[in-house]
Image 1: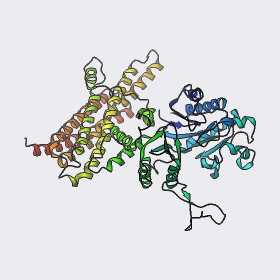
Image 2 (image 1 turned 60 degrees about the vertical axis):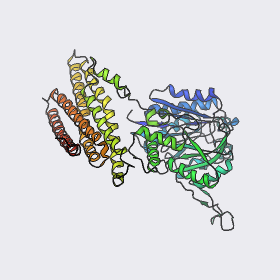
Image 3 (image 1 turned 90 degrees about the vertical axis):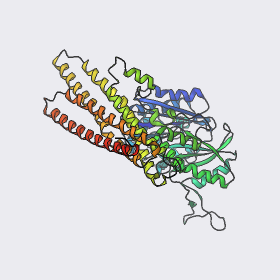
Image 4 (image 1 turned 135 degrees about the vertical axis):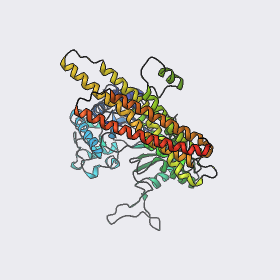
Amino acid sequence: MNNVIECVPNISNGRDPEVYNAVAAEVRGVSGAVLLAVEPGADTNRTVITFAGEPEGVMEAAFRVVRKAAELIDMRHHHGTHPRHGATDVCPFVPVAGVTLEDCAEYARQVGRRIGEELGIPVWLYEYAASRPERRNLADLRAGEYEALPGKLGKAEWAPDFGPNAWTEHTARSGVCTVGARKFLIAFNINFNTRNHKLINDIALDIREKGRIARDERGRFVRDAHGQLVYQPGMFAKCKAMGWYIPQYNKAQLTMNLTDFEETPPHEVFDAVCDLAAERGLRVTGSELVGLIPLGAMREAGAYFLEKQQQVCTGVSERELIRIAVDSMGLAEIAPWDSKKKIIEYAIEDSPRPLLNMTLRDFADELASVSPAPGGGSVAALAGAMAAGLAAMVPNLTVGKKGYKKVRDEMNSVAEEAQALKDEFLKAIDDDTAAFNRLMDCYGLPKGTDGEQAARAKAILEATIGATEVPLATLARTARTLELCRAVAERGNQNSLSDSGVGGAMALACATGAYYNVLINLNGMDTSSPALAEYAAQTRAKADEYYKQAQAGAAAVQAVLRKGLGFE
C-alpha cells in the first residue's frame, strides 16, 4: 500500500460482544480496509475499533461502521465511565503514509456528509476537519455528553455540519457522531497500586494540558475579568488526562489521550507520572496501550530508556528497542504484548518477507536448490547485513568498557547507523528475489500479437530496470558500511578487532556481488533506444564509482587489521 490512512471509530458499547463484533465485522466486508483491533471495555461501555488501508476502502468501511452502530445501539439506555454523546461517538481519520492531514480532513468531510444525508445522524466535524475554530476541540463539543444534546440540537450555534439540527426520536437513539482528522493519537493508560481514583485524578490535573484551576494565596479559585475560572497549565501539551477506577483490573488508572506524540512522547509522560506518584506515596505498576502506536514512538521510547542507563550502547536492533520500551513502561502488565498487533506499521505490512523469516539452514537449502532465486543478489544483501551487524556489534562491546570512555558518543552513533544499514540490507534480501521473480513473470507474458509483443517488451524492460536498481542500492550502501567498519577497527574494543575485519570482508563481498548483479542486468538490456542507452551508461558509471569506493574502503579496513593483528 502506498497511500495509507487509519480510522479509529469509538462506539458506545463495550459489554455486548454480539453488538461490537457485528459493528467491527462491517470492516471485513470492504476491500482495501484491514481490521487491526477491536478493543472493548466493559466499565467504559465503549469499544475502540481500528482499521487502516487505502483511503477509498477506509472511508467506505467507516460509513458502514457508523451505519451498523446506529442500527444496534440505542443511546437512550447507554451508561459508562467514558465521556460520550453518540452511538459512534468519534470517527477520526489519521494519516499514516503517503497522505496529509489536509487529505484526511477532506476524507472526514466526505464521510461526514454521507452520515448526515444518508443516515440522518447529526455530524460535528472536529480537529483538523473542524468547520470553525471553536469546534476543533473534542472536549468542547462533547461538553455535557449525551445528556446535554436535547439542549444543544435545535440551536443555531450547535447546528451540525451535516445532518438534522433537531432532537427527535431518531437523533435521541443515535446521538451525535463527531467526525474528524487528527494526528496519530496514542491512547495510553498508566496503572497504580491503589484503587483511589481521586488520587490519580490529582496527578491528571498536574500533567494534562488544561491543567488545574488556579488558586490565589488564600486558596480561592482565580477568575478573570469576565468571571471565568483561570486554569494553571499542566506539564504536557497535547495531553488529555483523567483518573478512574477499573474494577476489571482492581486498580486505578490514569487514562490519557496524547494527541501529538512527537511533541508529547508517552515515555516522557510515563517518567513524569512515576515521579508524581512517588511524591504521593504511590507506585506505578505498569501501563496499557489502547489501540495501536507508531513504530517511531516505540523506537524513541526504547532509545530514551536505554540512554538513561549510560553504560550501555544505544545502537541496538529495532526489536531490542521495542523490548526495552515495553519492559520500561510495563506495557505487558494488563495483557501480553504483541508488536504485530500493537505497532501500526507491523500490523498493516503487506509485503511478506519469506527469505528473511527462514532459518539459516532453510535459506541455505533453498539457495542450493534448482530454483534460480534466491541467488547472488540476495546473498550479496545478506553479506551486507552481516557486515553492518558486526559494525554494530563492536560498539556494543565497547561502550561501558574501561579505557573507552572518550569514544562512547562516537560508538553509539556508529552502532545506531549500522543498525539502520543492517535493516536496509535485510530488506534487500527479499527485494532482490522479488525483483528477479517479477522479471521472470514478464517473460511468460503472451506475445501472439503486435500489441502483446509491445506490452511484453515494455514490461520486461521495466522489470529489468527494477531488478537493476535493487543491487545498485545495495552496492551504494557498502561504502558507508566500510567506513563504519574502519571506525570500529581503529577506535572500538581491540579485543574485537577481528570482528571489525570480518565486517570489512563481508562488506567487500557484498559490494562485489551487488556489482556483478548490476552488470549482468545492464548487459541483458536492449540499449538500441537512446533513452535506455543513456540509463545504462549512467547506471554503469554509478556502479563503477560505488565499487571503487568499496574497494578503497575495504583496503583501509584491511590496513588497520594488518597493523593490529601483525600479518602481511
